[in-house]
Image (cartoon, rainbow, N blue to C red; front, side, top):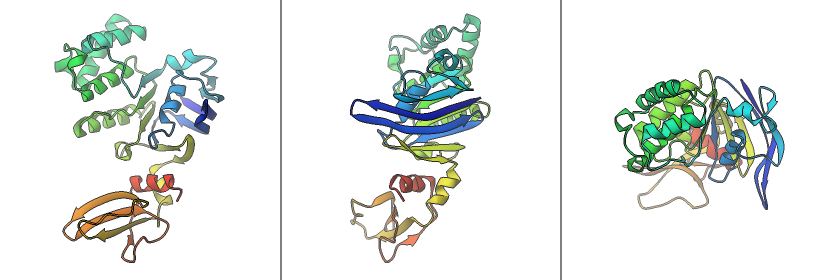
Length: 286
């Protein structure tokens, strides 16, 4: 399966949310869509989910324009928005049955899938509880279960780790990585560590523009020579204008890791970039 985004632009009155974005996604990829808040990630995902139409450009699934034929995408889509549209008075089982009915699943098929997904999401023991009693992380897991009903071949999840604790984040990340072995999985996040270990392809958005598309090693390689580390005395702070990627306290002072074209101090040394460093480097225009 191939999803082609061709010169997509989205204009909202005076705001250009997406500016001439083009890329191609294929089955077998977990694609990390990264960028700061307001970069256009959610807008792009809504366009792919047929919830919005671009001002110009097109999106094609296996050659079929999904704006002209939205059912082509809807038949194979599992979409989890940033804010899961829960119905507080329903239990987890009732909510998932409701979503399954909207998707047109047969009752027996729906019940089998719901049972398996609740187990997979570690929610079996809470299946009969009202969603209003769920924590934010539990509601996110219900939202992902809803997106996976019907065994979709294109899975789009927008900021899925919001409200999750570290163990829940790892569980969700591993599940999406497994699903991506035979599907297109697009995961949006501004937390680079959420996709560092699992994304096979990256799309980096800033202010609606696609700054980078490629693998994590390619992005990291581009940041070589632009990441520095130095030590400040305790109580001191780096300049506000510096692109700091990490601050870490140690016995000898505060270790500062930052992105810059040249050494920020005489004692600064270059270090091997991480994906987070490389992302910051690209966003800073290095």
